Amino acid sequence: MPSAQQRLGDFGERVAAAHLQAKGYRVIDRKYRVRDAEIDLIAVDGDQLVFVEARTRRGAYPGMAALSITRRKAGKLLFAVERYLETHPDVADLPLRIDVVAVELDAAGRMREVTHIEDAVREW
Image 1 (cartoon, one colour):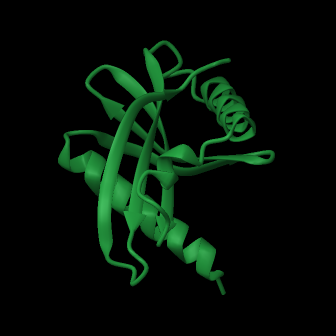
Image 2: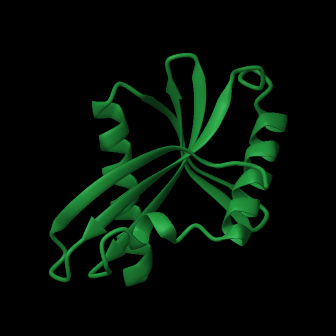
């Protein structure tokens, strides 16, 4: 049985995927897992491969979901991207970026805002 936090995260990933698809992105993979890291969504935007971290917060101050990417989390994302490219050589030559889709809910669980930040994570 998934925890409340897992259900919230899964909901946010579904919202993020729908948001990206509405913008014309094509989602090609979900929940790519590798040792201690996960990429929530992998999509194609035009000729770019986009790795997406969905961040969902309920009842927090506006903007908190987007600000929740720590240096450690960014490092894990970069590690997972490297592993993905190693195991998917067919897309390894595409230009890439890491985006964040922040899903903010009010305390009652109603949608407050979805914010898409392109190229949000880069190597330090």
